[in-house]
Image (cartoon, rainbow, N blue to C red; front, side, top):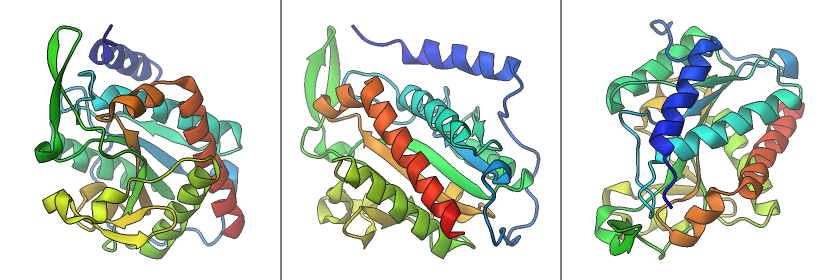
Length: 262
């Protein structure tokens, strides 16, 4: 049976709004504000961004569930895990609206809140040319079992590129230590316009300069594609509490290491 992600996501957003959680920010302040030279966990302002919105829900999984629902569930757990590790100033960022306007809302919210770090949570798909068809729950669906794995993206246009790359590598190493592998296809010609430069071939960090949430945030910024939901087996894994805990734990461990180095 299909999971009613859209209904669940909308309900969760209503609860977040009622609790006073941030949904969108005020206009962004000037870019290039220097970040802190040290990291005190309880004051370190981490923004965990839920990729996409209910109106612009991202990719569809192999079983026709929208990416936004996957992102929301994992981002909530990552936020809770970071808070439990002492990063008390961590906040969940949920935005609404259409795709491109929502990107600028995210940047404005992070910059206006003087975030020290921006982490955007997503789940992956593949270019349309790589999709195959199958039937699930009586409906035509699309899948690609050819590729799987997570991936991490940073932008060289970010004012804290070196810091962003360092954190992305730390997250990648933690995920690798948990036995997970990264999505290697982004460096292949088959990806077409989605092809990216591989910056770290050991842990799967890619360069994505033009991505708004990475390039226009004033803080260090990393985008995590937690896994491929267009891959039928990995979609099931990404729906499991066990995988959620592994990914959230890896992010928290990376943040502890990152903070110690700062």
